Length: 410
Image (cartoon, rainbow, N blue to C red; front, side, top):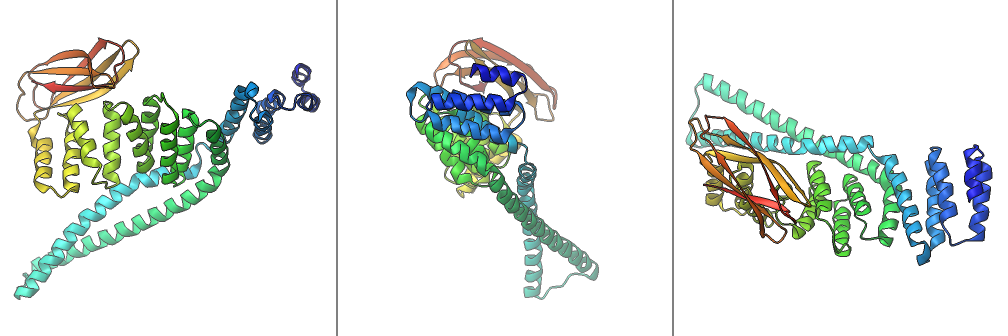
């Protein structure tokens, strides 16, 4: 092997490979010769040959515990090569844009359909009563109802085209990602607690339209990784939700929040995912947990309202909409939370939402561990704020094991 490395530095790749094959025959269960050959090919940009040799290295080690770490490294390098080839695939980028447009298209169709239904209902009511509009009013009514009907038709056509494009992109990505997914499945089967591999596999499944398989990968990771850092799930979960991949994103976030229930941004993304999935069972509890941490934030309260609305509790939904729209005088927005081994920093804005000056207030922030115990308490005096004025705050505390926060104002 040393001779092979020496001759490879002189550019004699064929001679180096011959020496490495000889080394592999001398020690058939030692994967290092094949792994070295793979590295030589990879250094020259020949990823296909590098991948083949990394696979050979992994197979040659078999179940020999002596070479377990070498086997793991070889198989890891193999899947990394394949993932690198498909990262930034045009169909994945296009699909992300299409998914991002679906919500606005559906909202527009719903809004236009509601208005059109009211116009049609009004026309039918007049006919039933034998009433007629004045000619000028009838002309306006005809124009408005026709325009609204055309808007609904355009929206439905655009939505159908978007869904068709998404299906085509999913098919293309399934084919393009198949080698990488195969290599990752082989690796994860051998090393099921590897967070990087599992989250990468779940992401590829999700991006190619296989949400159930992606969620199952997160389930397997949660079952096998005993000391799994919840942040390893929060990052991928938030990204997946941001890309419109709500089912696997929700699964990753739910697993992470089972280990740390007090990470606000994860709870917020989870509630968004449940809202988009129209999960009437899961949305309300998630939104209520969010509002318990972040009670003076309009987005939090509107998600609670949506949770009640999904359960057809209209009075409760209206009450929370009113709180979000008019009930908060000063909104609190936490824009940064950075915990480390020695403490945490939290920064945000207090904004007067009213048209009149706000009253001075006192903000108390509790920094919590994963069990909900208060590690440190921070306070901030908020001065009277002019209408629409904001006041920044930036607080830091020492303490080990800080995992999340909650606040209250007085």
